[in-house]
Image (cartoon, rainbow, N blue to C red; front, side, top):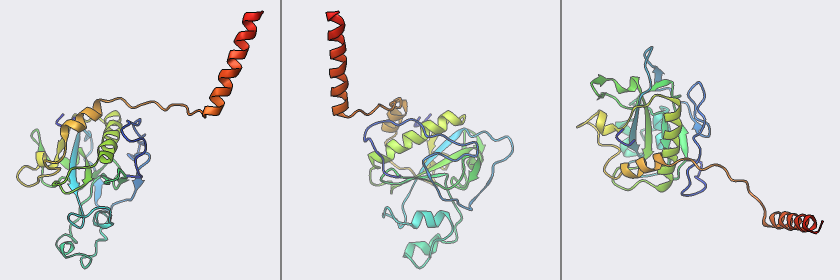
Length: 227
């Protein structure tokens, strides 16, 4: 392997992989269906993960532009740049927001239109056998810790569900044409986070109850010794 949003809670901790349904929807993700997808070719195994970056308008984060773009609702009058892409029909399976929020546009079992003209290890048309994840960013500024945590969590879930053999950037499957996720994407950090096991949930106890139980236990032990 090359490298291989909701607001994140528990900063710095690894959460168990989210469940993925038989239809390819990830639990906990906000699902906004994109029409820009179709069926994968019969018999295609999902064995490649492609990481991208995107920001709309360029250099701005948190707005509705990406969602509108992937759902064919982008208003070309809303920003000067939009006129050049308003008629483009593209999508990705997932978008990871700057705050770690996760949006799913296409079920994993379907083919999202994210890689375009592409090839990997001698196979063309990477959309046929890949899953595309967009990281909200420009490629010029570092991605956030919340994004890496969410990406690692999502990747672990995908690895558990599908026979993914390679994780690459868009620049790897479309060299010379694409540069994302760019030099600011920290592949080493991502790989390290993938290797870390998810932390089990710990039972929460209120201090008062814990002290009462301890006192009661001590009292029983003392009575047992006296007997």
